[in-house]
Length: 269
Image 1 (cartoon, one colour):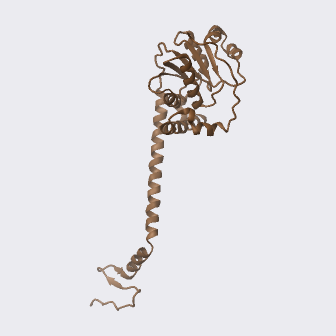
Image 2 (tube, one colour):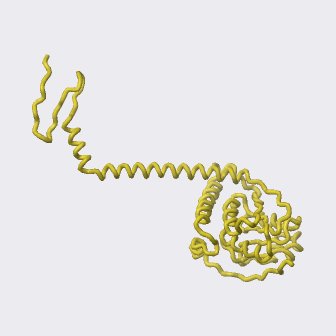
Image 3 (cartoon, helix red, strand yellow):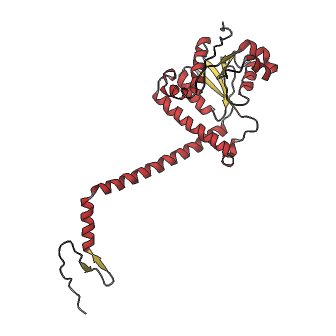
């Protein structure tokens, strides 16, 4: 059986050419497809851009996931540093046991004064004494209340002012363990390298973040805190002074702040 020679077909048509004993090649369609690709280069660039965007999205998602697990590991392994004797102690409100543990540190001689930062406007010194009746002497003599701060940036600013007022060079900071990474970022940004910050993380009774994956509320708490930590870390790389922070002003507008003035009890000699 002799091989058949394909008949010529007008331009733009399709020619069948035998490639082997079992198949045919559609040269006409291949040429047409090539001409279409040349006529529409935007489609190729669009597909490339889409693939690049998907790849970058996957890389970003992977980086966020790895960072989140590293963040949790840091929190779980956080240990209370040996405080020794710092110049001052700062407790950030917002979590159970923070104030009580900070007053205990003060009473144990680990600092000369204690600043409780971010106190609610309706919380008086008498209320703090009522919640810590055995520490009234220390609360009356050596505790300063900050009513101005409404977020962690404000805590850092008020801590810096307080340290400058008392000429302190070192502090022990008391806050919840999940809040400590962001607190250290803000404090070190506000205080600079010439001040010493000693972390004293607090774990609330009944709080077990090690099984966060089985507890939706713990997962939400850690997820939100991780995102806030990332924002704080990025912001402190851009802004030079927290008191000039545009971000602080932005988030402060959502929560009107009524400043309640309370004079510090007395300056340390």
